[in-house]
Length: 114
Image (cartoon, rainbow, N blue to C red):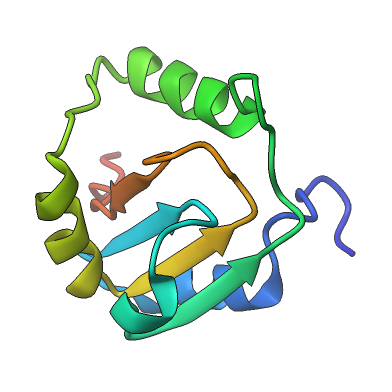
């Protein structure tokens, strides 16, 4: 375990995030999502689940997006399935609420100017 790094960031997840190129996406899906039939690369976090409450990760995502003045965009159910099929990886959690899925797209970081 690394200090200051959440234990949810497994070596496999960190490797996937580092390996995917800019514009690539990762689908974070609930336990009901047909992840094995959809994923090119399937990662698991089965112990993660927060039934009946807003997951801390969702609150964190919303705070980060708000800080960068980015608004999340809803994707229709079947469009999400198609997007997950083309995602670099699918991360299946233990979440049980229906349609509790997020699609993250990797951006780029501009070079620092001096």
